[in-house]
Image (tube, rainbow, N blue to C red; front, side, top):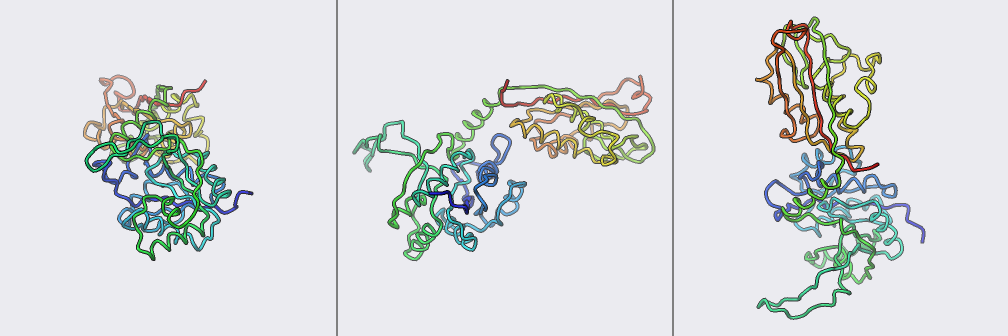
Length: 393
């Protein structure tokens, strides 16, 4: 059977995730430098065979949702219900006008779904009309009664762990959800169980052991360690920049506007701190220097804010599948005094780079009145960047 041309996906993200501990809804926490929900959504948003991604969220989470998935294409989120089943039903109704052939239903708490699993889900739904990804059970399972005694040991060869995305013909699963709502049934823990209740035959297809659901604090700890282990190529780069003073009434230093008696002579805004950091990151990537990416002869960079340059360098790391572990910059100047501004600068760099402030250091020193910085003719900065990349030859 040819693959249906219109496949949509529902991302269920309305839960509170209380078992995951403190820190807010688990889907908006970070893991591996990205929010859980961003990781869960991006594979669907970027899959060539999915034309629409419908998020279902808690109405109180609108602002945090938009921030967490910035840059991903999706339909406007719809509000979820009191249960997962109600939230899925809301997502289905929101998609009804689009008339998809197939719908994939995925939990936002499963951030490691791959494009391959999604493709298998689409193929399985096209062949069977209802299918779920599963992985084999490797442990022996015991059925335990109220008294805590073992009552049975099911044959594990027949057991499977169900995952998402679960895939269905759209009209069939929408009808099943509507029937359940009419009958007052709201106790189904996944859509396959609801489909079985509605009389559908549910097939299975190959899941992925890595496509696990984050439920407890221990899950986050384990998966952070797993992701870090994949980034075994640890690199360090250094950067240096200097700008002379000219006319002006302020300086841009580490992304912060600092009142001063002089300004910088520079093609851009002259932010020596950010420029040095950009060179450090590009050096760690073995990817040229700031001048090769933003030539001073190019008029489009005249007066440009240097936060654009730093964001560009950070994005180059992400494009290689890497993470920034630490950024450090040292300002060399007599004035202005950096100490009172240090934490403001750290916070600004962290904001631009998408890092926790604990991964950013800003230091300062004078040159004991020696040289051009000692004569207050300009400011210099040195920087270092430590990044982690997937190992490749």
